[in-house]
Amino acid sequence: MLVLGLETSCDETGVALYDSERGLLADALFSQIEQHRVFGGVVPELASRDHVKRMLPLIREVLAEAGVEREQIEAIAYTSGPGLVGALLVGASCAQALAFAWGIPAVGVHHMEGHLLAPMLEEQPPAFPFVALLVSGGHTQLVRVDGIGQYQLLGESLDDAAGEAFDKTAKLMGLDYPGGPEIARLAEQGVAGRFAFPRPMTDRPGLDFSFSGLKTFTLNTWQQCRDAGDASEQTRADIARAFQEAVVDTLTIKCKRALKQTGLNSLVIAGGVSANQALRRSLESMLEGLKGKVFYARPRFCTDNGAMIAYAGTQRLLAGQHEGPQIKVQARWPMEQLPAI
Ligand code: KG4
Ligand code: ZN
Image (cartoon, rainbow, N blue to C red; front, side, top):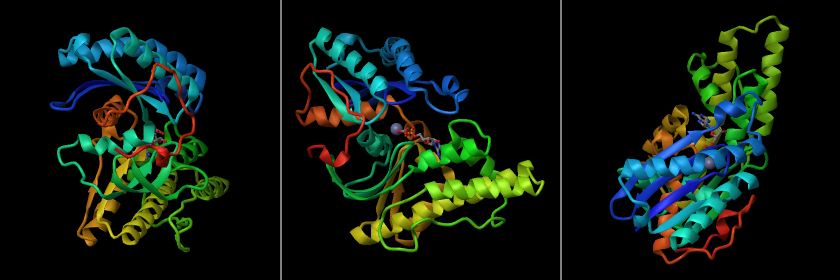
């Protein structure tokens, strides 16, 4: 089955063509980061308008790249939530209009299920069951995954998501949006051990997270240094390093606990923060100790993209799921509500 996938939940327009026999044929992405950077974060109205401009040219681009005629497309998968409603509506309207015009089915895909399944596009995909750590700009969740649509939430963030903590902390330290890659880059120049940061909620049982205190701790540390006349680039890098290590350590401790609780030794990390090299290294060394394995997508498919939506949609379409011609999106949508296939 040849499926066109469309992603428009936030500030990236992603389009891809996935074939259930041949795999991923083409994918294209337009990132709006430059447009939002001057505002220090995503401006929803600008995001929606830009998706409108980019969608059709990107679809033409993937068709040309894959050497596919539009008559060969058998179904369309699009992100129907969670995300920014205006942005989601652009993808949903476009998908439903094309599906209607071409006389093919359309299926709405859960954005986080897309992230969760993105490592399936790699050469050595994970096998069910596994524990998944979903770490994006909007979500931090630990999930037991027994199959597609068989999700048991083990723990989640009670306040900021991990990516959100990176973004907000970066902003407080005068770094650009999005903050994750900026902090990661700066942290590489930082010296470990200069500052002692807390590992929130690791001293009590449970698998929930809280990152907002860490953000305040970072701001206070940065302000104290500046008040003491030390606003050097090295100090900023040392703080970025301490912040990143605190987040990575906290995530690693909770992943280890989740693996112990479930008795599994296979871990999938997905979402924008799973592109973080320090996180990958830390989880890999933890899993080595457990004789297990960590799976993640190539960096391009860790952040938002059309390939993960085309893949997840294909699995649901193959199982006979699709929608009527309604245009319906959901800003909030617990992943556990998805049907199993
Ligand atoms: O999955 P994603 O592209 O969008 C959402 O669904 O939210 O994730 C974006 C988030 C942003 O918060 C960004 O700062 C973070 O992922 N991120 C990173 C890195 N690359 C992206 N965080 C830490 N280290 C990175 N290398
Ligand atoms: Zn995402």
